[in-house]
Image (tube, rainbow, N blue to C red; front, side, top):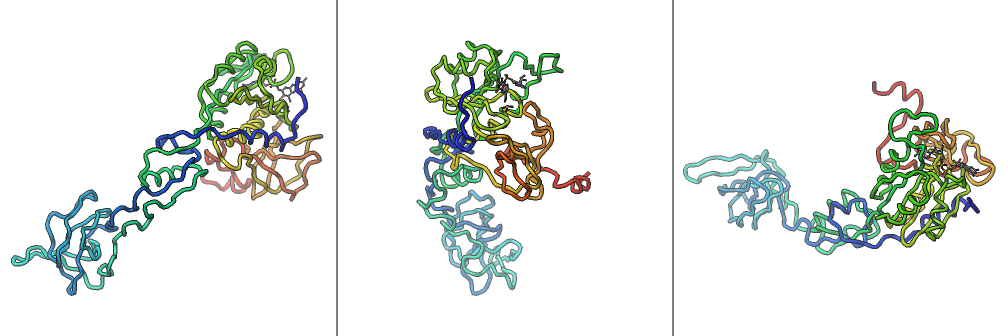
Length: 417
Ligand SMILES: Nc1nc2c(c(=O)[nH]1)N[C@H]1C(S)=C(S)[C@@H](COP(=O)(O)OP(=O)(O)OC[C@H]3O[C@@H](n4cnc5c(N)ncnc54)[C@H](O)[C@@H]3O)O[C@H]1N2
Ligand code: MOO
């Protein structure tokens, strides 16, 4: 039986109040996308030695812009050169540590080499070059950061660029909140995974889309399991999951075939959210068994995906340590949005010219409207008039895949062909 629905905002708050997973130490590569549990500080001066910013020659101070050119200069950035003597120059490349005694670096195209039987190879600067100013074309030691300086605060997500910064700062591993591992359990004996469904069968939507959506939310798919509407099998799959989160699909309602609630009762799980005052998706539930969360998504396709956006997103963000865990944006309604009798309606919509435009084909059992949607518009009872503010939740996975939408039919027709 589905009891006492939680108000929409309250349900999101409960899902988003899960405690972040305990920190672990991981390689930099494995830490990308995780929230930092420690600050990143420079382990050394960055750069740790003054180096050349140009291919050219390290030169000493000169009244006459002419130097004895030392042989065996640096033709690779890894070469460490002996100090320069007075009146000497030596070849360097971009990134070469400049030898002690370097005054500036004369870039290749501003100098030339002359051969003299008496003096050997002589380097001469071209008239008017700016490269003879002290420090010119030299990257000073520590110009980016002093050893010990803070580069990235804890609680921030380690983006790929921050991981690369941590590498420059001397790190191999970092303390981060790991992504929650998710077991997907797809129920329904009528669900088939290939071919054209016969009467009484449906093609699976969740096994295809949920792994990509859940990964885009920052969790890790541990495994995907399927079961008929069999309580014993479901109990076993929940009880044995090597995961912090189990996401089930189907079986959330109250028919004899709906086995999720009886399975959770049998396991003694604590029901955190019994159902949510929203359409579609109202039989969605969130339970906890020990330290494992069970998120039950309704089997109706649009209802299941809506419930993932409403409850799955804040739950996964909270477990990852992302703040705020409850996340949405506000956009203006472009046209009238019809509301439900009670609670909220989740309407697949596009954002066109900064306004929300609802899409057709958005009944609970449908996929067609969601296929074109960027957001679920959250429409309260009573509906919204054009120009009113609408809370919008991202359709999971849309922004990560950089999906672009035609801004209008005109733009569409004049697009690249
Ligand atoms: N008497 C009532 N009946 C229903 C209620 C209610 O309050 N009282 N709620 C309705 C609502 S709302 C929803 S949503 C569904 C929830 O259903 P379940 O979570 O129990 O899901 P199932 O019954 O297993 O399936 C519903 C529907 O979805 C199809 N389905 C299931 N899995 C998949 C899949 N992987 N891919 C595609 N389609 C799937 C399934 O075949 C059914 O058509 O309950 C209403 N009933
Ligand atoms: O969750 Mo059901 O799909 O509201 O219709």
